[in-house]
Amino acid sequence: DTGVSQNPRHKITKRGQNVTFRCDPISEHNRLYWYRQTLGQGPEFLTYFQNEAQLEKSRLLSDRFSAERPKGSFSTLEIQRTEQGDSAMYLCASSLAWGGAYNEQFFGPGTRLTVL
Amino acid sequence: TQLLEQSPQFLSIQEGENLTVYCNSSSVFSSLQWYRQEPGEGPVLLVTVVTGGEVKKLKRLTFQFGDARKDSSLHITAAQPGDTGLYLCAGRLGGYNKLIFGAGTRLAVHP
Image (cartoon, rainbow over all chains, first blue to last red; front, side, top):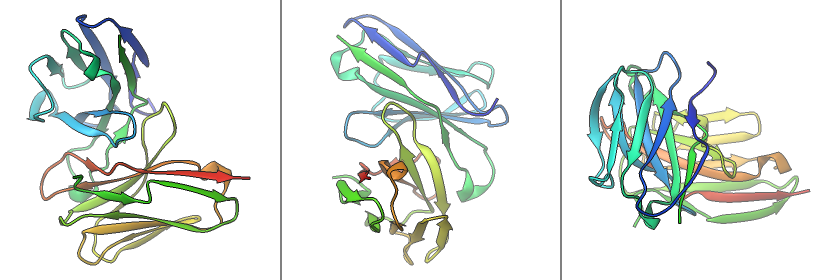
């Protein structure tokens, strides 16, 4: 396990469909983060977990979005009733929980979502 | 208005030139990280700076954190085509764990 992995890498869906993405963090990392990146912008924070507990959610995370990390290992991000505005790159990152300011976040390759 | 402003937005230079990109804010950050991102890929961490005034060097890249921990710069010496990419700065405010990103500087280095 050399890094954060995300699946699928690409997803094309029709408006109104549900989609689910998976993230597998670096194995010893107990914090896991989800970000969204639209064209020409930097990533924006969506939510994060410490072990299985979801500790913070952004106001960007509407009620159509839900994230889980049931066993404190991998995480899933589900978008229900997708809209064209959901088209973006969804990035997952992981970090250790200790180390203070040096809790460096390492990113996966992302899932590119296109909603037609 | 973004909390972290990066400048310039775009930079196109010839191989061998030097360049500096900037990351500015009115807020104080507990740490600041620089990432590089290739098209269709996730950001790759380059460096973390924590202490005001801190300078870190990574081969031809020099990173500086402002004394007041509100700004940072990335200087590249003798740029190479392999340096091409999107450079993102990201900071953590206080005890929060989430990263706040700038919009990035897109660098193109031509042979």
